[in-house]
Image 1: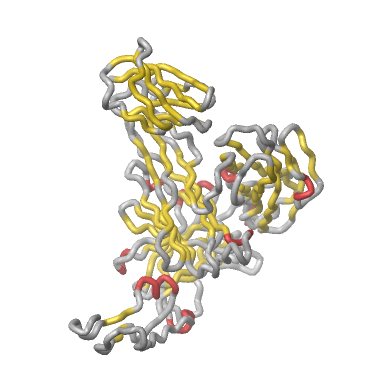
Image 2 (image 1 turned 180 degrees about the horizontal axis):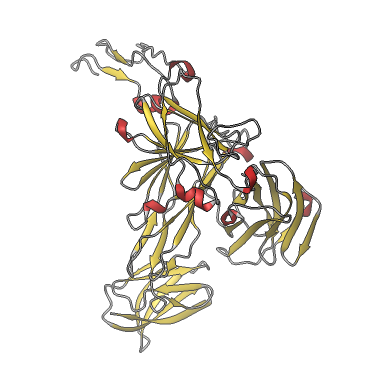
Length: 509
């Protein structure tokens, strides 16, 4: 305040306290009417109790296990289940439903002082069906008293005599930068989420033609290369494991900037092992040549143009990196899903760290990584990255021309949001999109006011000619060409870069 405004009331953000499980008994301080200048300073003490185990009085904790004998009790011979999504219904407290995931010990926890005395927890039927499981309970009502030493035990009928199944998975992620005439790096990750040992398995990595792997960077030197595919035959008898390998590839020179290189990884069990979810056994990574890598981005693994006659299943990946100078204690992502998406089909596929998925209502999802302590890139670059993947179906009946866009907002501690790129998927029929060649595409055709251009090559200019050869429009290359100045009729569009030119026809209506 200034001298004319008097004292001010200062508080610590209650949402931040709740998110971190902290407690502050006296959260309000009133300042004195002190005139600020370069020499005056006064401190306001906020004694935050960070030991949430002692001060937090509302929490949910439990274990998900494979109930082999169906008695609802976890016996000494029965196994826990990792990576199980447990929904906590908190609406009775005026809050929002939360999904937490069990860790490698089958344990799930959630703390929030605003929880009611009891909440309902549930493992969704769709997740059970996906893994071939069932449960003798549809939901459990549990106490939120943190002082109680009891855990909620959620029994799952895993089948196979209680041995359950393996859950192989593989993912790829980029390193910063992807350029020609130099070595570039890809991080390959794989493992087993399940609690059943997988034994022998095969891991393959297919890289673009013309690119050369530096085999000395392979973590496991027992490999074969056929064409442009590397294959490893591996073995692991652990009930759950996670491995990663940073592999270098040499990209030759002479390639156009903007060339898209695709890498794909596949993991497959070789023995008589039940892999309960094969949808995450393959992963594809696209790298764009000559472009610097933005460590905070969003990708949709579907073509930009999708069929309006199909209810497409869209898979999204959000990546983030701490490029600061100190560890990030807490990270969360706000993602507002398009109303053209069916929220009931949302499914989290993978996350690099322990995660809470909070439905804030209205299609807004919060992906929370409390207490992540993500290292900064200057101290530990390999571990400064994080990511998550989810999939969701579009609404049935999305019509021609409907556009599904998606943008994520990434918050590192309490810094301003880092806004990712926006993904785009358009529902268009085959006749509306004209594929010119492998390098560029225009749509819609016919067009009314805007013609969209997508090109892999770095074109410099776009020109539009009438059918008698008169130049009607000319501008620097743009992905959205305004046609308002043109009258209805047929035109020729030309893309130009130096002496290189390509062209095709379109109709303005």
